[in-house]
Length: 242
Image 1: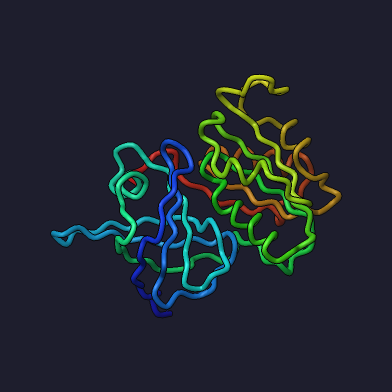
Image 2 (image 1 turned 60 degrees about the vertical axis):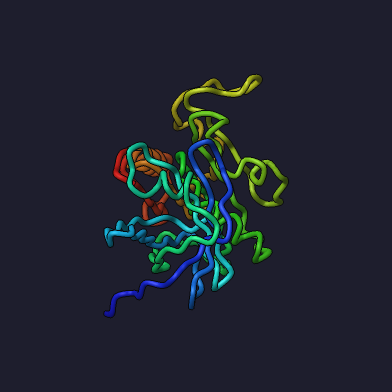
């Protein structure tokens, strides 16, 4: 199978999501269609010819010549801090993809869906929420979003807006907002059980986040009685040179 070609991409907009994360809207030459949950590979090349490649999940799908990614800056990273804080509108980079065909949600799916996100693992799951809305799907969604504090929430305004058929539960692990019913703490079996679907509903479950988080949630889902074949996972390491 031939390797996917690299394509020219131009930054159309950069907007902050948190103090350490930003969403980039890119125009991609000869771009193709993508499916919610897929990712792309991004290449930055320095003036001296040195290049670095990183993969990022798509935050939105739908427009063939557009790609939208949300990047979390990694301290000491080669690529992510530049994309979050320095890259300018009009800058060029190379992109290839979309990549992936397992961790995806398609509008023809009608079964209940459970999304469980840890930190920046919300990105491909948000693409699924947006794809559902764009397709006017009636598939019922439940999202359980585990994040350290309110300051680190991605897509805060959008997730707070009413979206019929999408129920959102936010779990704060280090600092809960004043008035929260649940104190700060790691995601528990009770959180997944309450915020998710009963196993009898046969939902498809998508879990994305750091490796340890994903493994824990997958184990919880199976222990609650969910079919392991309906639990799909996407993980990333807790550290890296992003």
